[in-house]
Length: 229
Image (cartoon, rainbow, N blue to C red):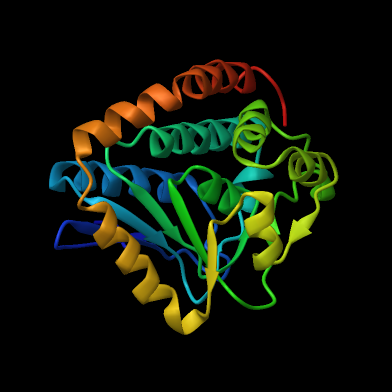
């Protein structure tokens, strides 16, 4: 598997680790590697655990790509949005073990998972697009609307407010916060628990529950491809 997203499989659990520079930037190559890793996880019929480097899950899209041209930015956002949609409809459970900061696309990775565990500490989690001069894309708006509380949705999407890990649970970015020392064991504990699900029922229930959201994201991806960010 591509070193940008390493892949380890054992006992029905696939571990995907993002490793792309200091801020774990999501580039076209990272999206491609993520998709290949998810392909492998599907073949292995594995519960997926996604994690990052110590201190950071991801700081968002690769700014070099985002600022290189309008077409490059649109293409990267479209591929990232399609990846989020894929995570939401993945046939096996998807867990994110958030190792620290999760900003912009990093936060959307959290919003695309079935269960999210973060760690205590001075970390920032949220959507900073408006703060850095980007009008939020339609997919981002709809994904945030679906997964965040009403209050947090407005504060996050419109005001670019960042949350510490505890407040990120209240907002809807995370489901649980543990100490850094516990993250590995708690993530694996949850993953092991989820391996015991009936995966056909899990897949069918997930698709039924998220049917309207997935259809909305499909339409939003198409709209975003037509507009500048």
